[in-house]
Image (cartoon, rainbow, N blue to C red; front, side):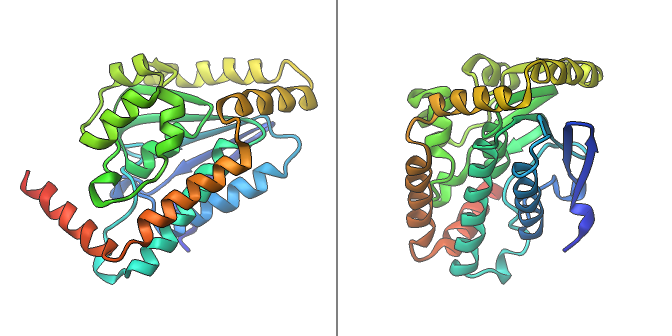
Length: 252
């Protein structure tokens, strides 16, 4: 694994994780997903952590699932990779601390799902969002998005695959704030002060209660979401569907 694909930096009770594949738009390779999953596993066991900040190096936050080596994939290898992405999204969504995603540039597919899984979702400067996975038959992050922005928005965005601008993202609740790039550090410091006001057990209990309100089915709901993803990805011909979708996008 390329250790540089994910940059981890700890500052007191704040963990910074930066996707570091700028030449690939920070697309989620298998090794990057593994690194993120391992980092989330360690963070979840860290009783002193209050805030995790997720960002992307270069021009974009995350352009989605890395399909640059699609010709080397099989239906089964893609199924395994998409399953790991869904498990990563669940780990982020159920983290026992505040999670902040900083989107900029293109934030697409699994990258948009990663953004949506965080409890604080900021646009730094400008960003666009898209959820194209249904175009090749994948059900990934769908229920989570619907819980966040409502069924009407989720259906429209997923079925159309259209790009959303920053204003739409903020108005719908997909993004919680839009701030200027130069203000990110000062605003993040304010967030850190907010989440540090209470003692750790209380802060974590409050966070868990709020998360439960957004996802009242808890682990049972996560299992249903995972099953939907697996059923969609296990349908024969996944690699061919993805290849056909990419070809259609190049023509449009």
